Every structure is written in C-alpha cells, then in structure tokens.
Length: 525
Image (cartoon, rainbow, N blue to C red; front, side, top):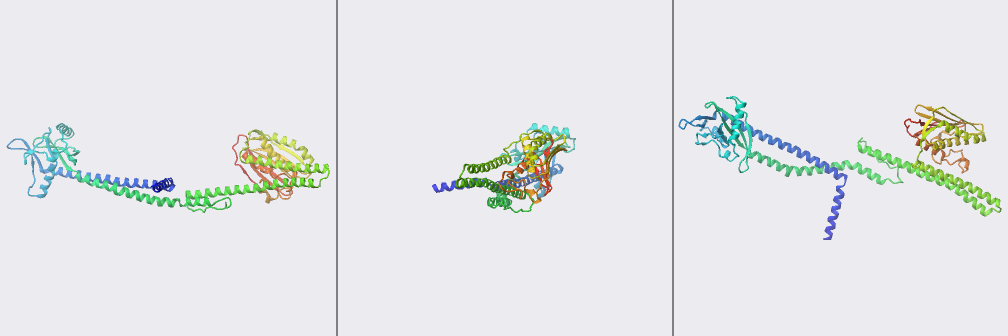
C-alpha cells in the first residue's frame, strides 16, 4: 500500500511538472483552438443541415397548399342540410392523387371565420384530423384575429400571407404548421385552413448528427489536435532547447562558445543573436576582470616586494641609525605608493559601479581653466615648460565641478610630465552648437599610433614612459579616470598624437541645457 501511494505521489508530481512546461501549454492552447475550430465548423454544418431540412418541410407544405387550394378542396353548400361542407375533388382511382389527399388530411384543420370547424363531406365529421386534435388547439379568438388581419391586409381573391407555427403533440413529436386564410368565392367569405407535417425525421437526423459530433468528432478532434500540437510545439521548441543546452555548456573557461544561427530570420534567430551578444559581453567582462586582477597583483606586488626587500636588507646589514632611517624612509615611500594605488582603485571601482554619484551644477569652464592654470604655473615654470590657457566666453556645462577639475588635472599633469624643457602646454575651451569643446595639448614626445587604443585601459603604460614603480611615473590609472569622467558627463574624448611633436586631447561636453551626446571614447591619430 505504501508503494502504491508513493507511485501515485510521484506520478502526480510528474504531471504537475509537465503541466507547467511550455510545450504542454502550447500543446493545450493549440488543441483547444483546433477543437474550437472543428466544433465550430461542424456546428455550422449542423445549422445549415437544420435550415435545409426546415426548407424541405416548408417547400413540401407549400406544394400541398398549392394543390389543396388549386383544385382539390372546395367549400360548398350541402343540398340536403344547407350547411357549408368541405368537398374533396380528386380521382380516387389514381393512387398518386389519393396519396396526396391522404397526406394532406393527416394534419389538417378547416374552420370558418369564427373559428368553428367546417364539416368534411366524406366523413361527415369536423374537418380536423386526429393528429391535429392532439396538438395545442388554435383558439377561436386567435383564428378570428388572423382572419381580421388577412382581411385588412388583402383583397378578395388575393392569397393571404401564411402563418407558420411549430407545435408538439402529447407524445412530444414536433410538427410544422402552415396556416392561411382562403377566400370562398361561393360564400363570398373567408375561411381558415391549417396544414401541417411532421418534423420527427428532421429531429432524428439532427440528434444523430449531434451525437456523432459530441461522441465521435469532438474526442477525435481533441486527440488529433493534441497530437499535432505536441509535434508542432516540439519542433518549434527544439531551437530553444538547443540554446538552453548550449547555455549549460558555457562556463567561465569556455566563454568563446557561440550558438550557430538557424538563418531563418525569425524570433528564435533574434534570441540566439541576443544570447551570443550577451556571451560576448560576459567574455569581455571576464577578460577585463582577469586583466584587472593581473594588473592589480602586479602593481601591489611591486611595492610590497620593495618594502620587504628594504626591511630585510636593513635588518641584516644596517649598522647605524642613518641606515635604518634611510631604509624606513624608502619603505614609507613605497607604502605611500601602495596607498595611492589602493585609493585610486577604490575610487575607480566606485565610479564604474555607479556608487560615485555626480553632483551636477552649472559650471563655467573658463573659470576652471584659469584656476587650474594658476595652480600649475609654478610646477610648469620649475619644469621649464610654458603653460597657457585661453577660453572663449559662454563655455557653460552642467557638470560635477570636482570631477571636471580631476579630469583636466590628470591631463595637465601628464602633459607637463612628458613635455621636455622648453616645450609648451596649452589649455583652451570654446562653445560650439549645443556643446563645449575642451582641449589639452602639448609639444611633448607624443604617443605611438599602436598604443593610442589602449591608453585609457587601467594600468596601461606606453613603453618607454617607464614601468618601474617610481612615484613620478604614475599608476597607469589617470587616463582611466579621464575616460570615465567624460563618459559620465555624456561627453566624447578624442586623442591625436604624433611622436616627437606632441599630443592633443579634445573633450566635447554637452552645453548647459543641451541634449546629451552619446557617451563614447574615440581615438584617432
């Protein structure tokens, strides 16, 4: 008993899991739609069949009515009794005419204008068939109203508009009744005739059709729709499963894996393209993280190794206070460099992760350039470099002044550092249409073309500019800050450099109140 219960629970879990699957839901939707369409089509055919059967019954009654009114039935006065009776004129030896009259008499009622049944001359009984007597009776008031309606709408000698009714007898059999008023030329008075036919065969046909629909067609359509939907959904979801399997195979060690396109130009190809682009971005992020880790390890290892070596040498060889002081001084310099690296990395990490929020305000770049030129005037004179600043009026931007000053300071420091004695460094700014152009250029040694695309990478140093961890050679992070600050302000930074002649940094920022430009970093020679 426990085993069976566990099996039932497992089957229930499997069914619930399957019912939540996309293939199951697509199949159910397709099957439901298929069944609705099939049942709708069959039901429409049933409605057409019902209308056709109804038309046949109506036409049959119209034919009997034409025969009855044309020559078979006459209302005449009986010579003996003097009462008006229904006379039937047909050839009793003709089986066809006899059959027609007998069919007409099966469901028949003939009354005068007051609703009283007229006597049949042959049977000497009221002209009301047994079957008609079993139907809900036409009340005299109803007959009188129909006669009055016909009299008011027609003229003597014209055919009156028929009245169509459906009635059921005591056994539930359905009959179609055609009733109308006929003008009696002899009496010059109307009389009422109701002629009917059974619709039992029509109902049997429709019941069989409905039974076939719900017992045969509906289950078959459901099964067929489910099977076709299951196959179609399976084929449609095959590329999705391929994408999922490929995603499972992708790890940090094989981010170069891509899913091949189906070249169908549909939504699945768009999904594959989007997925491949996501993997490309992840691969670039992983590559950047690995490079960053390697760079950080190298940058931190260098001062730590220097500090350790200096302290070990001092412990083993120093014999005087001055030697210990010199070792401690050199170690403090390396510790200071190490602190600078940590602070710079922390600041850059906060900036790139969005934790460093910009405090925007209306900034006049002319005033910023004048202040920075004044601050760097003494270092420039000490290096034998001429520093000049020029700014046209109207250079206003919506920016974080602290970050803008840091960006210009980094560019200005590099320009002074790599410009030889007798050279020149120039700062300028000018308003453009919807933007402001800021330029920092020098007449220094320049940057080779092959290194220009990498100068904004973290820890990147142009060979020949020095890679030893000396304080005056920088950390390789300054231009990374420059690029981030320009991008954060929706600016564009461009670099032009010619070895031996100098370098020109051009930063275009949106003017105050102007629409933001696309954030990007471009490099040209």
